[in-house]
Length: 268
Image 1 (cartoon, rainbow, N blue to C red):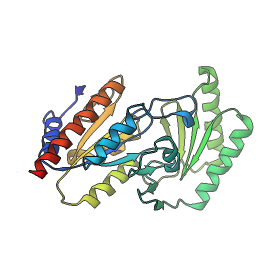
Image 2: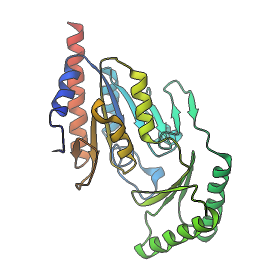
Image 3: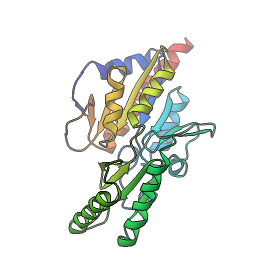
């Protein structure tokens, strides 16, 4: 674990949990709770994740997954009851009781994404593309470097022809690129959650690994602890860096122990 800034935050978070504050734990999925997989549909969580998150929930912490994936994907990959999921980078919300909120993008922009997907699929039939709410993810996993370069040139060419006004945003993610209609982000999801919490005594942390998680780190600011999961240092808004699966496990286990102490404290 590397402390990047605000060294007081980490012990303060666990002290507050141990004193009975309610925990709110927000986590990205791929690269944080699950390893990257060439086929994202097979990216199951680390073996210890469901049980540990379930224990954390039972000690009173609200667990929320904030992901670039479709929310429904995680109901299969992470079968854990009571978890709230913000999917498509905060553009959809799946509540623990099954209710779902979905942002409604501009129909013209949605049609543009569908057109680009159709045309790219003709030229690159073996490339995996993922259509989400207001987004089109194009995955580079498994492609040789030379092919990735050609694919990126094709994407740039399609955007030049199909989107000359620059309506869509192009954002890189781990081994891929995403074309997005400007709209809600993971940062907006965090801001919405903080607003709902109001002035209640809570302890909030966000764990994430990707560039899109920086929006969430920035939105959380001094209201909680931002945790970057990355084997290598990089420029970030996070307070702490965890290098690998083992350090994520240790952090969450420490959270569980603090929450248990808080529960004992409340029962006294």
